[in-house]
Amino acid sequence: GRYFAERFAFASRSELSNLRFVPPGSGLFGFYMATLEFNGESIQIVNVHLTPVSLNRGSGIFDAISALSKTEKIHDEEIKAIVNSVDSHQPLIIVGDFNSVSTSFAPQYLG
Image (cartoon, rainbow, N blue to C red; front, top):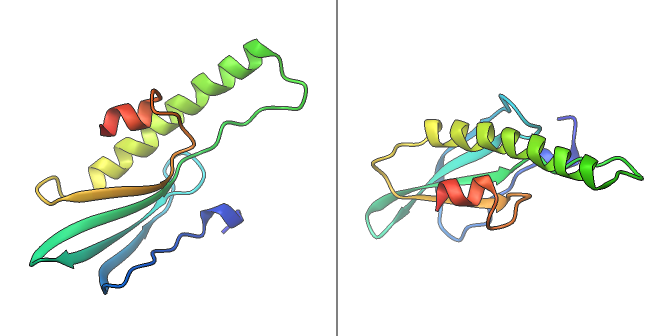
């Protein structure tokens, strides 16, 4: 890939199956999916690295607000791509780097 940050890993004591990388449709990194069998039930796991906020050196407050707004729109697209890629009838765990605070779009949408 183009970025070191797009290399995903799962560390699990249990065997994972259905490993699949989904390239980015928007944003920078895409996401990685797997399935874990736990107590006879299949659990989907998604590892994410959402696009970070990009600020130029010397940016002012209005530039920062604009960059945050732009990143939130990208996070919206990234999270919806994940939601559209999973089976809504199976348990799901989403982990990784959200590049967000709890009041941002991604955590609120998933909560």
